[in-house]
Amino acid sequence: MKSNIKKLFQKSLNFESIFSESEKSIPNINSKENQNPKRSHLEEFQQQTSSICIFPLGIRENYPGNYSKYLETTLTHISQLQHINFEYALEDPKIQEGVPKLPLSKKILILDLDETLIHADFDEEFLDEKSNKYDAIIKFKTKKQDIEETCGDNDSTWCSGVEDEDDVHSVGIFIRKDVNEFLKEANKYFYVGIFTASVKEYADAVISFLDPENKLIKFRLYRNNCINFNDSFTVKDLRIFKNVDLRKIILLDNSMYSFAAQINNGILINSFFNDKNDSELSNALEYLINYIYPADDVRKVNEDFFNFRQIINDLNSCK
Image 1: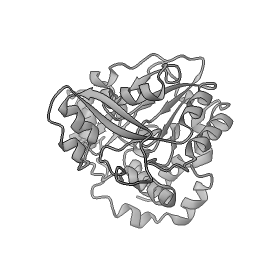
Image 2 (image 1 turned 90 degrees about the vertical axis):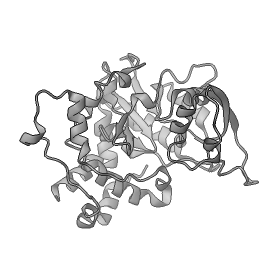
Image 3 (image 1 turned 180 degrees about the horizontal axis):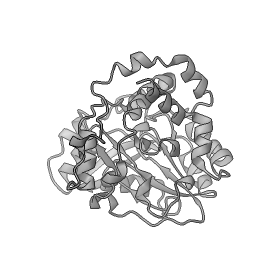
């Protein structure tokens, strides 16, 4: 999180060079060829997204020394999606599975899991480093197909070694500094839940380790609840919670693509891997308590602080 983000972008954005990276322009979804009353909303969503080609930045690009460049590129990508009706995708029954009805008495704080609260070393990248020791070994049972989905595009020895279905597997994890304190303190002000792009079996094992008494994390959503955008990235559309006013819900995530549908409901946090000196959760908690908790509309506070919407509007005005 950066408080001087507005000044940073005013100085650094080069609109002409930024838009030259886009291979395809936004399709005109109001044109006659895209208007078909017989199509379902899901089909309309697929039509709207099919002509957009985005090569998203990976989570490793979101680190403190590269923060401005990460924002510059991701906001450019997100600016191309402003005419996409993500709400159409929410009509997919699979996306609605397990979505809870949330209380109206508290603001809702939704937390990402991987690289936000913990890092799971599926690639065993840090296994041979003597200075590193896993904080925990997480065991979980899942099918081979789900394992491959969890590993994603990683060329992982651990993933490739999975052969048996419904077998028990394990992965070493690093836990971000101050996670327990963060969760306990956040619960005093917010109704806290997890929304992850990982598969259920793996995510449940990690969450149960972080919250063994099931008191700090009140609900859990998984990969099937995310919107898959052309197999490039996932979006966590907060309108999935039918009874919650968007003025009272916030998403803390290390991927800006996650809150592309509601840019002002998101707080971007740097990706975590195994930095023992990381203090991002403490910084985020201070912002949440001092700015988000007392706000009548969290979106207005976020916009005043980060200026993401204005940057996107400026990008679109330069087309």
